[in-house]
Image 1 (cartoon, rainbow, N blue to C red):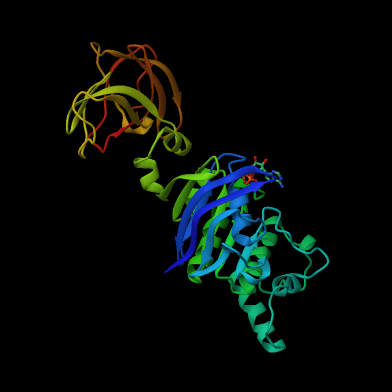
Image 2: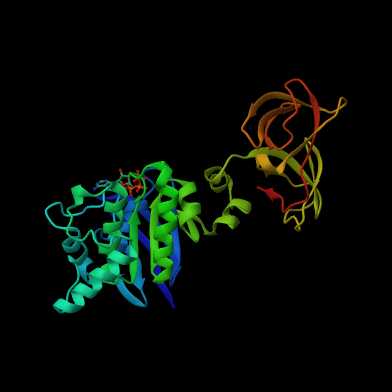
Length: 342
Ligand SMILES: Nc1ncnc2c1ncn2[C@@H]1O[C@H](COP(=O)(O)OP(=O)(O)OP(=O)(O)O)[C@@H](O)[C@H]1O
């Protein structure tokens, strides 16, 4: 059974449609990143799952129980959903201990103490229960907000840009730490971000938003290597698009020569389309007779970032061949891989 099931959801603000026929499922213990540009509806979906935003059509269910749907609306505090916000939203006048236990109901004094100790240990804040939020670092405050969200054992955790206020030097470490905590406790989570780098580090699955619906959902590797369209391809990284015509089931003609695909090309012979080549999928070889020329070069340490002119095309390449210089003639090769053709 899937933990979270969102089917054909529509939602609006005063008649302005924001979520449009949105579908998404999340299995037990999985972390999905809702990724997409500003204003595409990520937070609106998170709020709809939490019961803070009504939906006008469709359904949202957790473990088979419908929370929002036809004539059904379970209030936010009865959904078994925990939320972690960008600004931590801790109560400044409460101690760390009181913040963590704020939503915990139905336990006696001893059980509450045991839950608190467990949570403090989990987020590595043992001994700091008596402090107030202002006596903690930003990272520690964020860990209190995680402990608070996990303390009442939610079935699902919702995280809204929780790392954007964290210093970039400690962000990665913290994301991995929190990911580890969620995995340890088999908590399913929906994580909103506009950063693909955060999504790659923190989530198991990506759901890329486009204007209120999911353009593509799946493993990060799959979205990167097999994007459904240019929108998905562009969001996940730089790419070159070259015109091609299909030669046969495994080859295409392109401005850099005939390229081979490791997978069957699902277009007919002579189909004219576009092929995606990531900058690191292209190799450069110096050749005085080459039909391409280096026109820009930037040294990045382990690789060089080149711009290469082939006929009227300007192609971006990231190569470990560091010795090539501007003006040099080269040939371009793309090793056999599953070609992405639109
Ligand atoms: N309370 C509101 N009233 C009216 N419109 C709203 C309200 N909240 C959000 N919107 C609009 O809904 C759209 C989606 O907003 P939402 O906050 O879900 O986007 P987002 O993808 O989370 O963006 P960001 O990455 O900038 O946080 C935007 O056009 C926004 O202006």
